[in-house]
Amino acid sequence: MRGIQLLRAEAGGAEVVEGLPVPEPGPGEVRVRVASAAICGTDRHIVHWDDSVSHLLTPPVVLGHEFCGHVDALGDGVPGWESGDFVSAEMHLTCNRCRACKVGNAHVCEETRIVGLQADGAFAEFLVIPARNLVRLDPDVVKPHIGSFLDALGNAVHTVQSASSIAGRHVMMSGYGAIGAMAASVVEFEGAKSLTITEVGEEHLARARAWADGLSGRVPVTVCDPTKEDDLATKIRDETGGGVDVVLEMSGAPPAIDLGLEVLYQGGEMMMLGIGKEADLTIRDFSRRVIFKGLCLRGILGRRIFATWDEMLGLLARGLDLEHIVTHRLPLSAFQEGIDLLDAGRAHKVVLDPAS
Image (cartoon, rainbow, N blue to C red; front, side, top):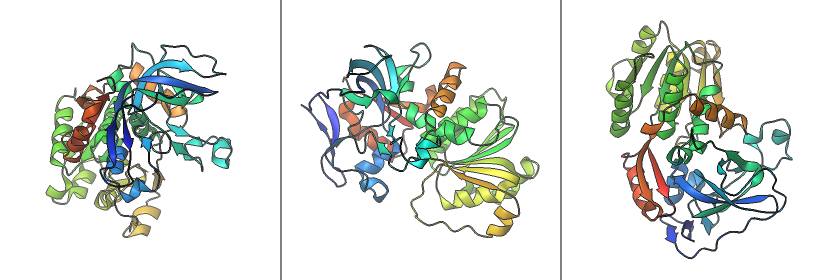
């Protein structure tokens, strides 16, 4: 079996490996033949051996946590599934014992293990996963290249749906990377009153503008580079009648968070998914801009298990269009090329074919 395996605890330690053993499902497990897998930002951090993820992995381990495929073999005690079923899976393995799990917050389980980081993942021809983590897909609704990144789409949907509402509200989103692009599509699909997208990368800016230009105009979308705008906060407040109702913070960049706090209207909400390079964040004028405006700041982690899956599959069934998210399709052996494209900002989602 071919796979992308982290062999060494160092930058560049992930390689294409031939001859890996085909995994066998144990009791309660299912083996899936992977149809498509997508490169995530986390995979980039692993390849570069960034501090944000290096403590989570112990080589050797097969990488990859975004995928879809078909059930190939069943372990003992697995009812309800058959060979050939089209599936994806929640890749967070939770303990079901801690307080978070017991009260329905398994997405923040104290003992979470992530497939593709702490267990062999989906950058291979086959993957073994607990049957309870499987999610059934409708092949008439979800095509394999879209099914390959449902894990990431779940992050976007969780971020958007964590706001008290989106329809009819002014929304600002900072960062138009892959998950930001998905979130923007959901915001537009759900009928926001307006959407302002801020982004500083030239390639991502171009993609955001191309996407906005192709819309029907039902939701007004403004795309801007905050580093090239004079007094952008005032412009946004003027255009939205005093400020935006919801900020979706997808970048983790301190200047973007600062702008978001400045433009939020009284009682507004900031959903924070982006993870910045800096461990510490200083919020200036905290009392005036947060407490006295009655803002709600909420950190977003992963997907609510399995409520977010139901929500995003419902959006796809209703016609949410994400074709523009996939910019490149490559064979598994071209994994490093995909990483290079993402590093250079020339791609949003790179989808890999394990069979080629």
